[in-house]
Length: 249
Ligand SMILES: *[C@@H]1O[C@H](CO)[C@@H](O)[C@H](O)[C@H]1NC(C)=O
Ligand SMILES: *[C@@H]1O[C@H](CO)[C@@H](O)[C@H](O)[C@H]1NC(C)=O
Ligand SMILES: *[C@@H]1O[C@H](CO)[C@@H](O)[C@H](O)[C@H]1NC(C)=O
Image (cartoon, rainbow, N blue to C red):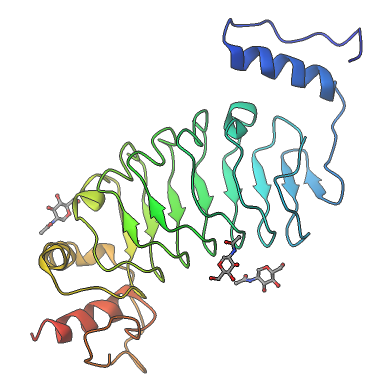
């Protein structure tokens, strides 16, 4: 460590001490992680580099981190404690299998989070609890089979939620009711089961149809009436038509 680097005034919290020593390590200069592009002072672009983990270290005041198209299996536990300025995180197309509890601690500014095309299978209660400023959350194209009814608690600003193209057979409507600002939700591309949960979800969709994105009804929306939702098409509107058919209406 450089003897002349001055750490931030400690605030008492261990996190702040950690932050202080990392600041010393990084010094005042701006280190762009090897192999990544730092296109402006607040953006780090590490897309499609075959990275096995989040680049470390990278500048602490980065607001936009693009790591799509790598092989990253984990968001480090203390990630947002160090990178609390992140507003935009593109984690699309990686190998995340789970989100550890507390992953989003410190992510108070995060507004855009793309976790699509990962290998997530379950979302637990409060998975995004600390990310209360999220506006858009994409979980599309994972392998989600279970979403806890409290998975989205505290996401008071969330406007866009993408759950399409997963492995969901049911979804407790309470998960969606917890989102007061929700404007658009995508649910298509899941193998919905026509059970009791589905009936609740179905009436939620009927009453909240305006929240589903408008699709293009022409072409290919007719589902196979085999009880499986997988082929129900590209958009939620399309899916809703499919549901109407499945429901026998
Ligand atoms: C995922 O990333 C790999 C590696 O960059 C790329 O070849 C592939 O096309 C990407 N897939 C998607 C669905 O974006
Ligand atoms: C992620 O899922 C894909 C497709 O199911 C699979 O081929 C791949 O091995 C998985 N990767 C990890 C890290 O689990
Ligand atoms: C429509 O959405 C609002 C807000 O999430 C919810 O309070 C209401 O219960 C929904 N309608 C149905 C039928 O579930």
